Amino acid sequence: MFLHGVEVRGRHGVFDFERRTGQRFVVDVDWWLDTGNAVAADRLDATVCYKQLYDCVVAVTAGEPWRLIETLADCLALTLLARFPAMAIVTVTVHKPEAPIGGVFADVGITMTRRRAGASMPMEQT
Image (tube, rainbow, N blue to C red; front, side):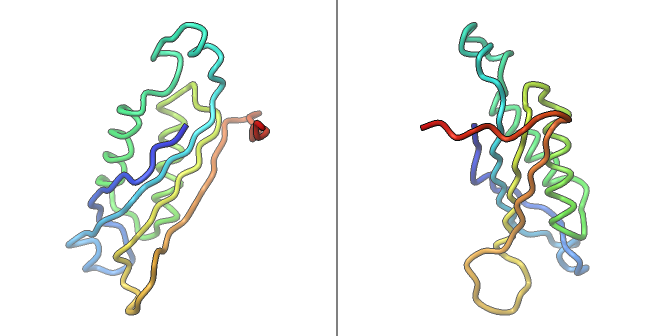
């Protein structure tokens, strides 16, 4: 499952002005879970509700400021795993499109994957 392109104003960065005025961040989340129970029962409580996931991403990204987007991505991933017990693996990408680089660039960010103990990446289906 995935939720991509969540835009949130956050105050993350190493420079004082970034933490003071904030800037736009874009977050993508991909997650893996065993969908068997959800499919069999056709019940929302057996899967991950993407509205609740969206709200969690917004709250964390708009919340406590971090100096590094690496720390923000880790915080997001660990928070999502804690909040959604059906989620076995989560990959979070944090884009910082207004990073103070001083030049023209298409994108900058980090992608981080975290998993529950014992969870492994699923094999691709063909």
